[in-house]
Length: 433
Image 1: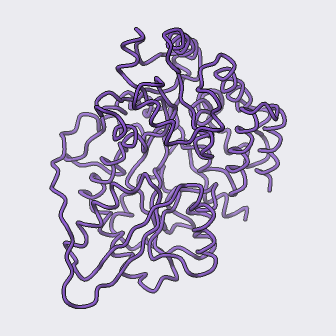
Image 2: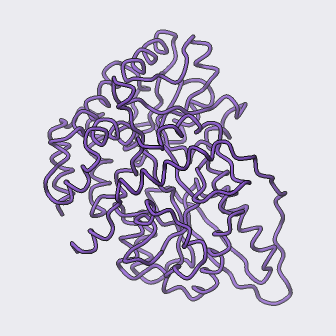
Image 3: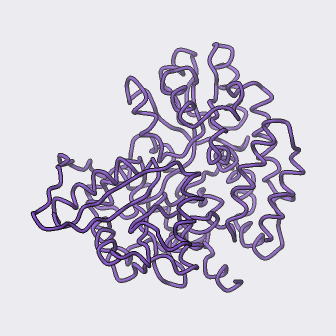
């Protein structure tokens, strides 16, 4: 197990060097789009590939599945989508029981029950290493895609976590984005509250939403001070309790104490959070850029919504951001249509399809060419990717126990049922399992 964890480490130096090249991608030309077509099948029996994914994969998957069916009419892809929390349990159970779909959602790196390292380590994912696109995975991202040198997941690129905000609400309240420091962010929230609008919508009833504010703050409170924190934690030389994780949780609760969240965040869902920002009932939400399309769909005008980095420090030069590989998909190693499933993933790995998927979820494409684009909403994050970005925290955790504990302790903190000391102790205990 120790050797496996050592191989799965993300070198921050390699990650940051790789991310430094992404800033130039903001200037590339816009890609052309092709109309979506309807797949047809011949008179013969089609091979059906079943796919189970999560909601933020739907727009891209539906479009590219239709394109694949047009190119290969003998294959029919049948997708279905479930909430993130459900696939972490029900789909993982199917995998273990040997009745998983041909294709399914996979999370990068390690740290959750449906993560690449956890599933591939159990022998449940097909090896994709022979596919050409795998040779172009940036070095710093390889631990998110690979185990023991073999590639088991396809992902179209990377996303960031920050504030999704309603520009009209900001304008009406007389506030400007982006704030450069934590103090400026608090002042901005205070001004929004005095203008009669909820500054931050928080849908903490949906467990995965609970983690995003800490993820947005920890790069500044932990990694800006010690970029080697993950390596030290894995070696038993650092902990959540004795690190900037404590400060991040204090800042999280400060937002609540100042009344900057909506009432009863533990009773508010992701969908309700989205609607609040999209309709102007709340000014912003701390979210991952991959769900920005959901906010835009719920708004009367998609152009009303944009993003900015959440500044987690009072020194602007000490503000770092989280940037991680987006949720992807893999092929079941024991599926009856494994070869056909792998062929579809190979299709997704073509540059034009990487571009198309990344565009649908406002992601930075895994690799870029002259037709790749960067969503204008995430352009403000690009200067940070040069040398002030770190992977999403769970992608380096050694097991699937820490993430659900993190979800639970945040809900307990918001409810006043726990202390920060107790929360961090629980996370440290889960990390050591």
